Image (cartoon, rainbow, N blue to C red; front, side, top):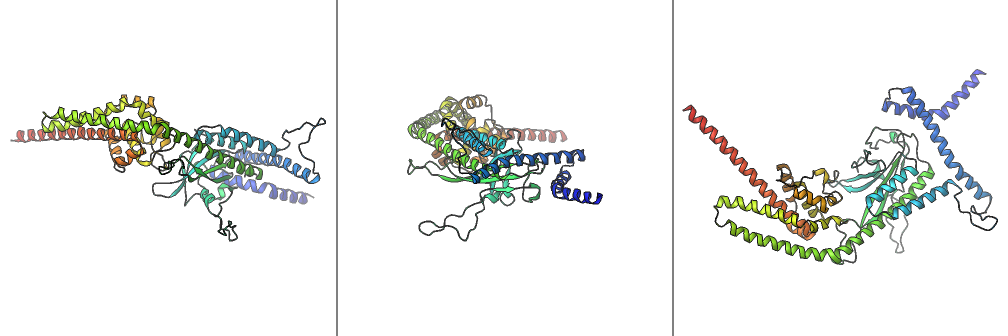
Amino acid sequence: MSGGNFDLDHAYLRTTVAAPLAEAMAQLAILQPEDPVEYLGNYLLKFVENELENQRKQEPLKTDQQRGEATATPRHQGDSNGNSQDGPTSELDKTLNQEKNVQAQLQGEQRVPELFQRFIEWLCASLNAEEAYIGRKCTDQSGAGIVHWIASSRTPTSVMIDKFVAEERGVTFDVFKEIEDPAAPVDADGNPLPPSVPKYLHIENVLREPRMKFFHVPKLGAYLTKGLKFNSFLHPDVFNDANPETPNIKEDWIVVSVDTMGQARSFTQPEIDSFQRSCTIFIQAVEDLERNLYMKDFERKTTNDDAMLREFNVAYAAQIAVQEENLMIQLQSMLEEEKNMKEIELRAAFMMYLLTSHVPTLAMASTRIVPFKQPVLVAFAAALGLLGHPKQALYNPVTKVPSWEKIAPLLEETTLKACLEGFPVADPPSVVEAKQALSEVTKADIEAGSPIALCFYLWTQAVIAQREQLDALAKLARQQEADAVALTAAESEE
């Protein structure tokens, strides 16, 4: 009798407890908590809690399915007076209503970062996930493909922000892999349609996936991710000079991911279905918002900014030309050595005066949403670096190129004015960085991209020249002092 009970207990343990206990032991080996027994107990309790929650979510769906098979009566019937009763009658109804509500909220957002944040915070709560995050597919300095994580439901405490997954290492890149289908459908002309990519990627146990990249202590749980392709309007080449009414639309990718790391559970099928529907809603909202922001930039650019900045550019150049003539007159009576020093000093002072007196016009650049082209961003970054902003406040930490999202706020009138008024003399390290950055661009490219950036470029060149002159004078003074000491020592020996 006792042997039979033992066999039953053993079978129960093997079928019910073996899998979670094995996972718990694997997690225990990784985390090595101070109290292993307490950890195992809490882990198994959490497993039971997750199983009960999954059963609770599945039960209404099974009930609805059984009802649908048993009767053709609509789920939403009228009352005795013929009035409609539209209240949610299942978990699926509630989920669909939540998705509809978040769709309306996303459509009300006016800025891309806020749209990202609202969506992933909602998604994380909706799926009972540990964290949700968004990444952009891009390339690093060497041209290799990466996914740069830019938003998290745990902001600002998330360790994911500004981390990246490389193409040759991360499992995330599987969402971009085209599916080879020998029986692929064809279009009306008989040409095969473009290959598709996976609908989603679900890693049920991240600890068993060798290509899973962790940015924190690995924990047992699942990883769910999806690649979303959309038409992007917020890129440097969107303005079409040949046909201004037709923007240059670029295909781009966003990656949305969620995980349950630490919950010791995988995502249920209803959660995966909701994830897919929500991602479709989200990417449509992203594309719509980018299109609207582009249209606002385009309208402002064509109806006001372009004409105003052309006039400003002419007036600015005229002021510089007059100053150069006056400078030559002032320097005529000076010795050649003094003339060079004074010319650099006066030119730097005048370029600073010009920037300070035109701050309201220069700050117009900060209102633009569409990123400028690379030469313009380099010019802005070089100038702002001289004004005291650290490199990490100007450059994308992953791609290592100037970021318009970081630079734009620093060009706002109040911020820019305070920096210019508090500017002493540029320190040598920032001058070296600015000079190196500007060596990779040309004045013509900067002027073609933005008259405002050209103003900063001219000022930066003047500041660099002044700093190099001061360094040369300091070096000469040190050399003269060393020569004097050597001469004195030689005379004493005699």
